[in-house]
Image (cartoon, rainbow, N blue to C red; front, side):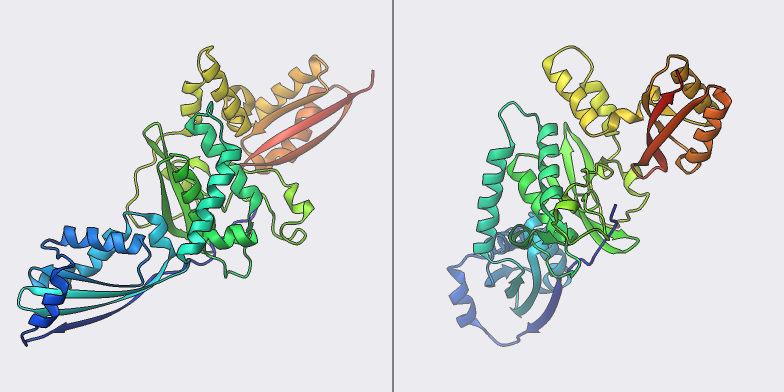
Length: 383
């Protein structure tokens, strides 16, 4: 499976601050009709509206201490952008100037975006059409997250040129870096009514972005890029052979502890502490139709392999399991083997120790990123 961080485009800014000692009554009389902010919170709310409406040039008026304004304006801008992650991650750069006289200041902001309002409108329309075909009234939020995850990772390919960063480019070309995956995930999950964030940090290969989603009050990490089924080194991205790769759920609704195995982040995000496998186990208990849906979801995600009855922990337990299967002449069986790097030799020894003349073949693949293997064994008996 591909593991790539790519490159996150980072906001750039230029600041010009000018404190005028002259009387600028003409300047403030023009701005008076536009309204003014008397607190930094009010100023931040006004900025957020401008950024979210995709304004490229706007002017705001502030009545308050000019030193506080200059000291905290960048923090206020970041807070205003945090109100909507989609806006924050398509904003390419901004420049602001402050001009003050007494306790009256004007802030002029010039902003550049990576996606035009028209392109975002196309994203919105495509997302609505896709969800209309994906979601049904009977689906719960857990099922909605899965179908959106599957739709994105089977539709997109990672952009090896590292030039496509937006949801619009992802949908228009079928390719994007992690930022494009995360922006599209944000749009689709939010439209489906799922609380969602964009998280950023780093992985071994560089800067990286992914999503966080909230289900039943619990937050989880969701890395759509790293669950992409296309493997590097296969035929051209988007080809039939690449699309035959199975969907992965290795980075699907993970805890902080699970993600920190190969992801780092320094920003503050909601704590993700609940095991999703355990959550589905609780939701799937009982005989109700809804409970059965959660049982099926657990199987579809491959989380059933974490159960004790389907997991073999060591060589001794493997020998016992193989002997048991051979005693009842099962010709096929599956299990998850925790010490995956020892599987080949341990499995060979297990068949030898069973002392029953059979032939066998085994196929296996890594399960998640914990070092275990998912194993399928076929046995041929002599009589």
